Length: 102
View 1 (cartoon, one colour):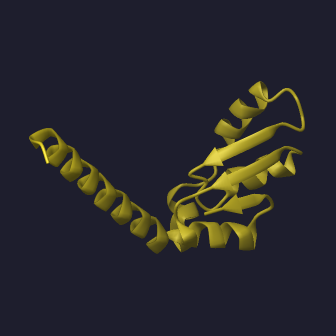
View 2: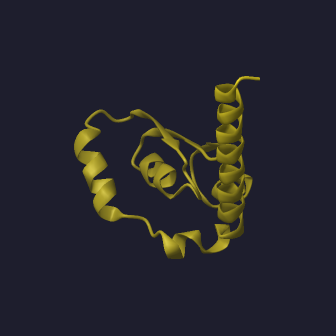
């Protein structure tokens, strides 16, 4: 293995370990996530100014507990939420309207 390949491998491994820790952290705060990061009504209003066509097909990457997926689904859009945290997706499916995948 060349020096560049070795370096790339260690960078990739470090990044992968970091992502694993982040996912674990989100799994741990699932029950209090909405207290830490409440739904931003101004952001929803901002989106609604650009989503003229209803229903629109939307994808929320990193949807967390699915609050935005739920709000946009309630507004008539077809929304899919994807998150890397299995706990967040489980919570989203239990509490929100929309389609969610892990």
